[in-house]
Structure formats: C-alpha cells, structure tokens
Length: 286
Image (cartoon, rainbow, N blue to C red):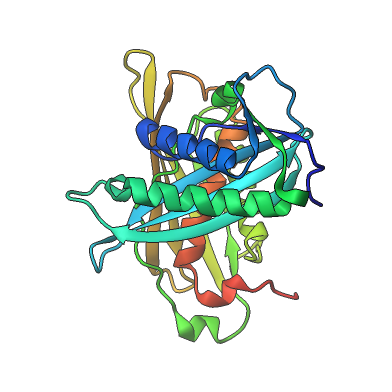
C-alpha cells in the first residue's frame, strides 16, 4: 500500500559504504528528492510516519576488472514493518588496487540515487510527500558495514537439475552478545525473503551457509569487526565467501545486536544469493 499524500519520511544514513561514500549517496538522494518536488525536512525532530533506510555493498569481480555495487532501500512504517523495497545492481570499472569502493564515482552515485528516488516517488500517490532527515538512526543501524568481496556466482547445474535447492544456516560463530543468534535469524529471514527455501537438515540439494564473526582489538574507542559468510555446495565444494568489514564503537556489540544484525544480513544476503544456482531465484512450492 502506498504512503498517503503528505506523509513524512525519515532518511537514515546509508549503511555499508565508507563514511564519505555514504554521505555522498545520502546527499545525492536528498537532492533528487527535492528535484521530484518532495519536501526534505532539515530537522530530525519532525515526526516521520515512514523511514527510508539503505544498504549498499560493493564487490570486485575476478574477471573483467569490474566492481558490482548492489543496493537495497527499505521503506518501513512507524512500527518497523516493511512497506516498500527498492533493489538493484550496477556494474562499473574497478579502480586501482583491491578497494571495491573505488568504483563509486559521482556518476554511479547519481545513478543509484536517481533510480531509488524514482521508485519511491512512484510508490507514493501523486509523487508527493515530505522527507525528514533523521540523524537519530545512526546509532541503531550503523554498526556493521556490509562491504564484501565475493567470487562470481558459480552454477552447479548437476545439483540444481535434480530438484529445488535449499539453504541451511546451521550456526554463526565468534559473535559477542546475542550476535550469533541474531545474525543467524536475520540471515534466514533475508534468504527466505529472497526466494531461497530454507532447510533444517542437509539433503542432496542443500547448500550450507556458515557465518563467522571476528572482533579485533579496540583502539581509540573503535573496534574492527569482520563477518565472513562461506557458501558450500552439497558436495562440500566451497563456492565463495561474502565478507563484511567495519569499525564499530568499542563494546557496542557486547549485548543486543538489534538492527545491526538486520542491516548486516540484508546486505550479505544479496551476495550469498549470487553464489547459489539460479533456480534459487524461484520460490519452492514444497
């Protein structure tokens, strides 16, 4: 259901890229909203019935010297329920070195923002609403940067042809606080939402997705974190790894992960789905 005319939106900081890229994306997004005649409130104190939250990931392709930038933008209501989603993928020449974010040129930032705003504006009746810029979202969703380096998706046709495939997420290890449980549950939700059937046990068509969290040594109030999601086919062959890295406030993940687990899983699921055979794009009727 579309948002009613005049409903206000909070635009959360973009999760995933380095801070400078995140700021550029958010600035461009707000500029495009204004060009669509959508009001952008400058104060975080204004009431917002809806929140626009973005997750962006970038990966280096092994062939062709290219980077793939995937993005998800979720619109949620005041109760946190998802009411609209924008997702897409852009390919661009990779920069020098191994930094997947080097591909985020101004032109690519503009392209992602334009497509996002077009979808959001089209979802709203008459394309009119107010957008509030809400800085309060930083603390709830900025803990894990879903920047990953994954191999190009591999298709194991002999396995996929024998029937609908499914995924098993048995465990996430190494996370402090409730991270292991929260990350596992969040990834299962995102994979299911992406059309990947889930399994509770290994079968001839089950692909294993295992998560491993590593927390680094804290320094100057910050602590590095790495989350690796490895994908293995039913024969035990490693298809690839989706790796997420960032710095978080030291000790901030020692308790409840909350929205941090949701943000990490939403971004990681995009890379994981690309490592699975194409039949997983269709929802199983089992």
